[in-house]
Length: 236
Image 1 (cartoon, helix red, strand yellow):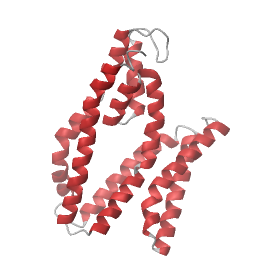
Image 2: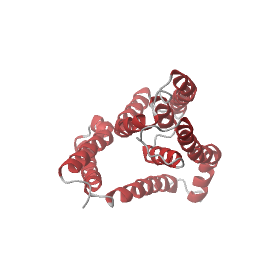
Image 3: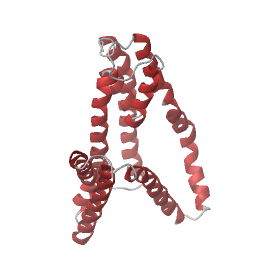
Image 4: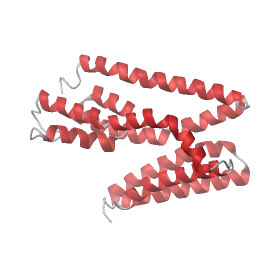
């Protein structure tokens, strides 16, 4: 852990995190400028940015909790770098475990050697390369594929996009609800809170509720899941 939290590792991971922050700044600037070109007003743009910021709170809390577990196993610098790039503790922990297991260790064991630790870091890094390659090589072609699916009918494109988003959420949620009571309760309560908040926002035309709805639903769902885990346990 002295090596895992050393000054040199902090310095070596700083450039990677800096690139992520630079990308975020560039995307925000481009989004704002493109929105202006599309005819959106400053109020609309500010509302969109506020909604995105609030909606990111829930996932950020989940990543932060996962980062605490990762820090305890691979140290602060590597956890900071990996979750800044990929953000998936569900991948990083098993990848690190796979690396150290090749030398007969488990995460959290005493006396893990430098070689075993380096292998864990390489497993995490190389294993996550696929996401980056697919994003880099595939993203420029996604718009053409979306247009082709719409078959020239502009009205179908937002329907296809919404269906794809719903399918992605459904895919992740079905994997969670079959895991146990805390996960199923978290999904159910979070979805119910979202529906109630959107219903209130529509009935009273309150834009600020729409902006906060997703973030609030995710945080409430997170706390419900933790409460169920503590009270009834992880099984059915």
